[in-house]
Length: 368
Ligand SMILES: [Cu+2]
Image (cartoon, rainbow, N blue to C red):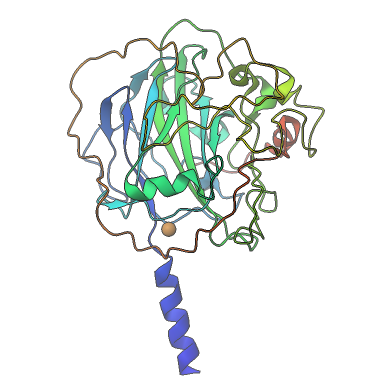
């Protein structure tokens, strides 16, 4: 009896260290975030959260921009093709590395109604711009690179129309996701103004709300075989917006394929099917390794995000960044590290498509 009690006391501790976005670097300029749950001292572009614990449950309002997310004071300038390096950190003050290594990293964007500094994103229409799962040909998740201090990297779509946008960076940690409700969501929002004169925009079938875009039981969130290789990982949520992937039939009309595997993202071949497997990190910072799915027609428009190097404009090199205390790779994450011998097959059979996501749209309380 006592032994059991003790055990249950100890176990939660092992998985209790989590994290947040400590800073973001946009075309080389660093923007710091405020530490979790503190009185903000920086006019940041990153919406501050009040807990670094994971958001649990697909209908949780905090799935939008993170736990108790607050509007941020500033907005960062970016352009089509701009490179964002999102520095996920462990703990609450940016001094430890990201603690988890199992599960996808995804990025979404949504247009703000007016300035993002005053925009309540509870009903924002999010479209996916990138998704990264297992590194092609390996048994390693891209997420594991964050443990060594690398940022999650994503490019603003090179053909995105100008405007005010939020970028929603999301990590899902799946170490407990063999059980329904076990998936840990870590969303974070960054406020941007995107310049340029491109015209790319999502269609309504590309868009979802958060909550609304996920269910607790869909593939990629409920993952009974997460430690039972080989894994064929299916990303949750909508496919990458069609204007990014080239508008080819890949993401279809969004109406024809709910639930089915979609012809498009070359389901389970070996290479990562989406053109979005930008290097998170380490090696080359430039995302130039996107494998083009052989099956999919080559889009005339370069498939941005991690795809071909953006025709990017020179970054508006303006004032120097605030301090640049990006998290270093040192420190000690305390989260229990589960085994990470997930088998290859980075292929992701895309199961859900736009129409389904659309269906889930609904209003679920407000929170930023
Ligand atoms: Cu954690």
